[in-house]
Length: 301
Image (cartoon, rainbow, N blue to C red; front, side):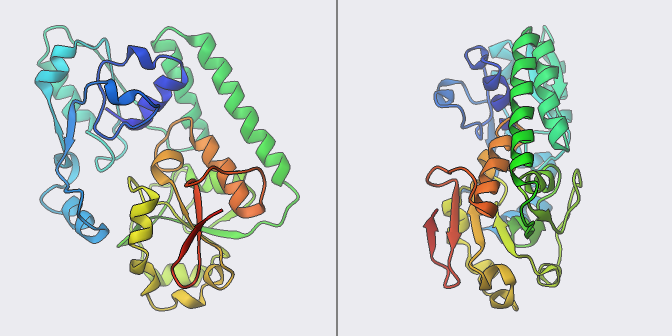
């Protein structure tokens, strides 16, 4: 019931045991063959402001998502993975447990609610125990920790640019939870949010006052192409052209759903992508990081 959980299961080598997924689970390749048990109440043509109004209005909370309880029951899962951290991100824990109570043989419901990088990676250990592959989980966990440690070492003595990460464009919403730690691991100084913080919408004046050297745009649930199409929501705001990040050509569009919004193993790759953005360390694949020009154009880097 959570894209990040699907990522975690795949990391453990158990993607072949998935019997159901959400409509937003899009990784790893081949996941499209797994039956979908949820749907969205939001139209794909809606813009950021319209989505925000829907989230706060008629579709507030878990009403954003439809859950096909009958289909879920027919799939007869042994374990259902869900979350209770954010009702805007996925079907809520309450709705899942309500559905499970109606099933003849109730599966185990496990809620994943990490807020920090360490907690995200610890989910691997938890799932490894629950799903019967603890040794695989420990090996994967150690590998991901080693990659983060290597990244921190490579950036330890480098200048630390001041970085603001935005996970929604209208209203402006700073990225919290594990994203500040991703920025720090990549050799930057995170602004606007503290590690583990569950953020809220802020006034644009807070962004201009923070004067970031680098501005990261990684809207929750939106692919880079959608972010690019909505750049005008920021470029039309007062003081945009005066931001140090804009003057220095350091405004970046990132693949939020894959590497920053979801608390899954790919957050480590997200930190590595940021190290490239901030310091030119390592390489990125096309589409993972796009640097915008002041005029609003975008190029892959």
